[in-house]
Amino acid sequence: MALRFQISANLLSWPNSCACCGGNADTKLHASASRTTGKRVRHTTTSSWKVPYCSQCVRHEEAYESASIWLVASFVLGLIAWFFVAKASSGSVGFFVGMVVALLGFWPCSKAQKQARSLMLSSCCSPTSAVQYIEWHGTFHTFVFASKSYLESFLAANSRKKRSEIQQL
Ligand SMILES: [Zn+2]
Ligand SMILES: [Zn+2]
Image 1: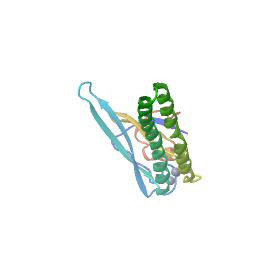
Image 2 (image 1 turned 60 degrees about the horizontal axis):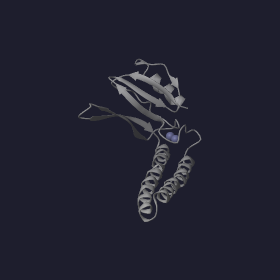
Image 3 (image 1 turned 135 degrees about the vertical axis):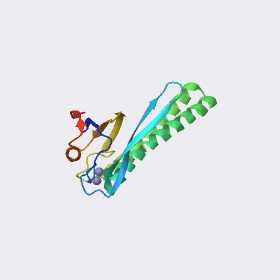
Image 4 (image 1 turned 90 degrees about the vertical axis):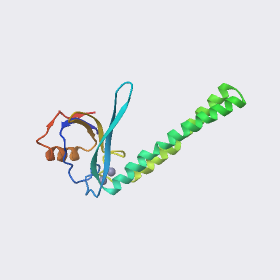
């Protein structure tokens, strides 16, 4: 489930339960968004919120995120293989070998993702971030929440702030 909405505030109250499984939160994870402004001189600003999590959920979240490193690594290795094989034999053989090497990364990646999923509790709502901070304009912040019950307690804690309708993605 993914629930998207905007809320206007300078300060938000985060209910002190895990945003993923709803259990007792004993730690926090940063949900951050970046934006780039300017055409000639680019300024990237990042803004973030500290979202309460339990340490078990931090573990599966980090394991799941790091799984995609395999895809990046195999892509880079594939490019290197393409370059050297193409030099040694022909361009099309190099391209083929490079593609095979790049695709090999999917196997350890999905294995690592499966491992991350095995760390999830039955009440967990998402293997990756349960709260995603998408963007902001002025005091308006856009979030995507994975947990409906956490969203409900979040809205109750911020009931006096202006917000948009909740959109299910
Ligand atoms: Zn949790
Ligand atoms: Zn979880």
